[in-house]
Structure formats: structure tokens, C-alpha cells
Length: 290
Length: 275
Image 1 (cartoon, helix red, strand yellow):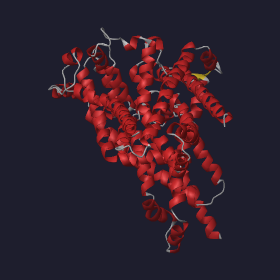
Image 2 (cartoon, rainbow over the protein chains, first blue to last red):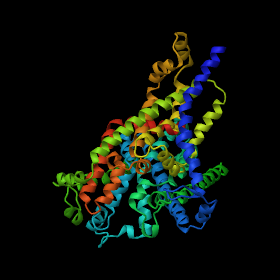
Image 3 (cartoon, rainbow over the protein chains, first blue to last red):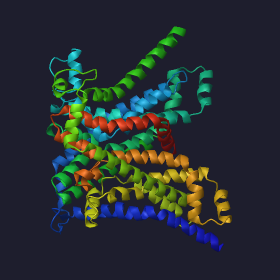
Image 4 (cartoon, helix red, strand yellow):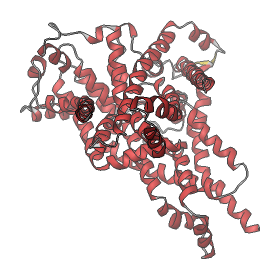
């Protein structure tokens, strides 16, 4: 009995690195950021306590609210086609007669592992209005006569950013949907086929309801990820009138380009509240429908 | 009936091929464009390889030490992955096989840390690291690998399902200490979970951008993604050099993926179903 207690003590030792790491690198910086958000600090002299002044500034900061709006717009414009595309292709690739399944899955998934910064640079080059290949293609096939200045138009800019995000993430969702589809037992389909159900009926009445938990999982995780978009949008720029500036880009610009660390800290907590709010809303909205 | 079936099949294949084309064509365009002179890039649509690759490359490496960034990123990614996998396996094993007090609460706490947005503490992280005089070193990037809630979750799931308690008991009877049991018995058995976590950890670290950008100042210490971002601003009108830079960043991933795609994809699927 005595040895049993001694052994279970090792459990604490084995999990200790996580907690030490979290306290030092995770929690301490988060608390310190909160402290900084209550100060005025230029990065050189000592921080001066100013109470809630940074938060008062934050709730009157129209730039901040604009970035919330832009982030949400870009998120919605990327998540809707992303899920539809992933779902459609997952259903096709789940068919028994399709060959080359692994090849297609691999090709669709590849954009997801490429460095987001690189993708941002690649697409900013491709959509460059004077030298980009997209305009060259459109002019060659005669769709447009003059090059389109994509990044001069707020909606084109947002569509491009959302398109890049969609292009990068649909393959990831596809793999998850395929895993979900493979979790549905073969007997369910076979029983439906025996009963004479057509393919569209099987999809609508059987597959989609059974896939619901997987889709909710994707949706909720994509809220957390989508509201924190940063790398690729940063490379595509702020857009005209800051139309494509995301919340994290604003945090980065405030803290690490304008060196306003204390206000940047308040922005970080503002973003935290926004992310938590929308995560809660999505979770509740999907739960009430159950 | 029969021809309708073939029609549907043809349409479905066409759709799959079209999406595959959209996935690959930007990379093809990147490779092709990187071999042309700026005057050609600006004036026409390029579909076939050109002859200017060496010139573009020389202009790029003449002012950006991109292979140094490449080596730095390899070093950071490999070291961080080893640390990450080791400590995640250790903690996952601890949570799986030892019955200590508050175990479930502590495990929920670990999972709870996954809900915290990554950038919440980034300013404080920078400040704490500069107080510890660790800015402009790789320590902050490596220390981050000590805590990885997803890794612990994955390792615990695997240990619960695939490492029988009897093996650990028999190790104890043979006189192994707990550390020795972990290193000699458990760690080798965790192979498949380690491979999955290592792949994700490596890709995540390879693509990491914000943390190295704010922590590292010296250009020679910088990572590849940060260098790519600086190439964009430094070569704003030299498109050929920019294309060579992003090609250098994409090609290793392409090769890596060509060999590992089966493992990567089954790892994503497994992680998602368990999550």
C-alpha cells in the first residue's frame, strides 16, 4: 500500500513540466498583459498606473470596432464556401466507385500545411494588378479588357483574403468530414438502399443528421481560429480604408509597430472578450437546435 | 440507366479534377514565374519555364540570407518538436497510468488551456522574456513546447487505449524505476502517437510567424517565415526574387508532404475524431 502511494506521486512529477511551462510562459504573460493594460507604458520608462483609461479608449476606438467587423465579414465569407466545398467533396470521395481517393485527398489537403505567410505573399503577387498572373489570365481569355485593381476595392480585397483562407482550410475540413462519414456504419446505408431510398434522400435524411456533431465541432473550432486570422491577411495588407485589417493585425500594429504596449494590451483583452462572446454565441445557437 | 451512371461519374471526376487544379495551379505558377525576368513577369502570362532562375536567385541571396533562415527554422522546429513530443508523452503517461489526487481536475485544466486564444498574452510574453533577458535567443520559442495541451490529450488517449497496465506492473516487478519504465517501455510503445504529434508539432513550428518576429531582432537568427515577410517588403518591385523566395519556402514542404501524406492525413483524421 505504501509503495502504491509513492508510485502515484510520480504522476505529479510527470505532469509538472506542463504546469511549470504554463505558469511561466502561458499564465504569467497573460496576467502581465492585464497589468500593462491598466498602465501607460512606452516600452522604455517604468509603466505608470492609469486605471481603466486604456479600456475607455478602447470602447471609443472606431478602428477597433472596424477590425471586429472586418474579421467577422472575412470569417463568414470564408467559412460558408469552405464547409459547403468540404462537405460536397467529402460526399463524393466517400463513394465506393471513385478511384484515386488518396491522391485527391492529398492534393486538397496540401495548401493547409504551407506556411500562411508564404501563401499571403504568393497571392498578393498573383493578384497584383499590374504584374499578377490572375489579371493576365482574365485578359487573355477576354473576360476583362483592362487589369482589375483588386486591392483598391474593399470588397475585392475581402473576397481575396476570404478566398485564400477558404482555399487553405477546406482540405482540412474535408479530411475531418471524411473521417466522420467513415464513422457511419455501412449497414445504415445498405438498409436505406434496400428500402429503395435514392442518393439525395440518403444524404439529406441519413448522412447529414449523422454528420451533425462533426460539423458542429468544425464550426465551433473555426470560430476560435477564424477570429484570430493574422499571418496571411498581414501579407495581403490592410486593404483600402483598412477593409481587410483583422483584430490580431490591429493588436500587432498597435503594440509592435507603434510601440503602444499598454494600449495594445487592452486591445488583446478586447479581442479575448470578442472571441469568447462569439464562441459562446455559436455554442448556444447550435445547442438550442438540438 | 447505365449511361446516366457513367455521366454522373464523369461529372464527379471533372469536379474533383477542377478543384485539384485550383489547389495546385498557384504553386505551378509560382515555380514557372520564379524562372522569368521581371520584364517578362510584368508583361505577359507565363505558362512555361524560363531561363532567369539563377539571376533571380542571385539577387535574392545577395541581400537576404535565406538559407541561414532555412537552417534556423530546421533547428528550431526539430528541437521544439523533440521537446514537445517528449514532455507531452511524459504528461500523457502520467495522466493515464497514475491515480493521484485531483487527477481529473488537473486534466480538465490542461484541456481548458486550449481555449485561451494564443495572442492574449503576447505582449506580456515579450515583456517577461525581455525581463529574463531571453529576447533575441531561441529559448522563448523552445520553452513554448513545454506546454502543449493537445499533445497531452493525444498521448493520454493513446496510453489509455494501447498501453496495458500489466506491462507497467511487470516492469515494476522486474525492478525498473518509474523513469526507466517510461523511457524503456512506454516511450517505444507510444510510437504511432509520437509520429502523429511530431508531424503536427513540426509543421506548426515551421510555420510559426508572430513569436519569432517579435522575439528575434538579429537578422541572422531569424526564421524562414519572417524572412519571407521581409523579402516581400525589401524586394517590393523585384517579383522574380520574391517568387524564388516563396518557392524555397514551399518546396521542402512539398517534398515532406509527398513522402508523409498518408501519415499526415490519417493523423488529422484521428485527431479530429477523438477530439
